[in-house]
Image 1 (cartoon, one colour):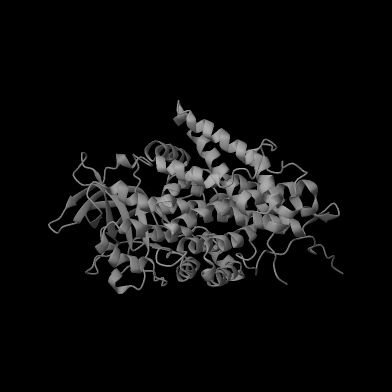
Image 2 (cartoon, rainbow, N blue to C red; image 1 turned 60 degrees about the vertical axis):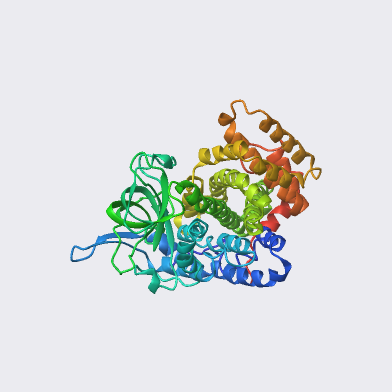
Length: 550
């Protein structure tokens, strides 16, 4: 009789067949907090539907396939004609199509649109993060295009459509469209003032041809792109342009894709280097010479998506760690019940909940669209983008370690999350850019600081550690000597104080207490799992653990 050497025991079941939205208490409560009561049932219904789809076996399979078989560049067809097309696995199109049909490119035209879209983005991109790029770019192009009412009237209905139709043809013949962005160049990077791409005017008002290159072009198979170029050679000011892939007569615009980037993570998504050959046709968006001011509206919206995307990666990594340790037995009981592992899990859960609360608060500020909230966003978005995206990688790495060797294996999905984790810190301006943007707001926009202080001031007196941290932050702000060298420290402190104020006001006492003790106080080590053991760690872990019905 053959020996049975491969009986599988003590292996957790896969985390599949669950509602990603309903299983996330912090997210569900945040939606309830920021969505008007009259809309709440509708919004919860649509997010529940999306959450069940995100947690399904087929969505998880799509995510795996889209990353195992990344996009391929086809520069020419079989006859030698230049086509510059990027081919994606069918799973990519299924993911993107489901997201578009769920309204993840439409936040601008419906009540509570940003909160419901941010929550949906956080839910759905847990199935696969790479296709979040075209979703984000398409959503964010809308406020920039509104600088030109005629362009907005033509393109906004397509960009906010619930219909996804891949393939390049005139947008007038399509029920929906996607947008990308191409700002950075090889010699400049984040310094867009070093742009060398030139735009020469044509006889028709607002029409130009472009000559130049872009070192990073996001979502190169989109229907149109927002780009920056100089309007009169090296001395010209930067202007913003809308560059369609297909011209109104059906011919292809000259948009030469030189190569796709071979990236650390984000493998399912294409990022490209592109060239404009002097015949590349584009329309100016907004005033000539005001390109940065025009496209910054797009950048600001994508920065919020960087915060949300990082929160999504953290949530999925923490959910996997919590699920694994709830089932995996060691030394006679589940790993999650071991005191030291419980400390690690609670610490990770705190980071995830704080990121989720902050992303939703920023989205709610977009929905409010008041002068006060716009000023708040001016400072809160770069601070949040700086800090939340930086916390993503250590969270993903620690969560992977909770699975031990199983987490280091591709089939677990944890390596994909780890590779994805630095992305949002790099895109749309890396850490130094965000920290310096906080300083710029401090120096140029007094209303931004006032709005920020008003926001955190609503929580003063609720926790002595938060009060002390606010005082320390105000001391930092009062000393502008050598402030640039301290910009990262200041951005970090501002983001932590803002997170602390949100958790003190809205989270369960054990969550707020642990966050303030460890992030704002001094009772914490340099790594995860060093929370004070006297805190309510079990309650924090149970709050965050995803539960699979049945």
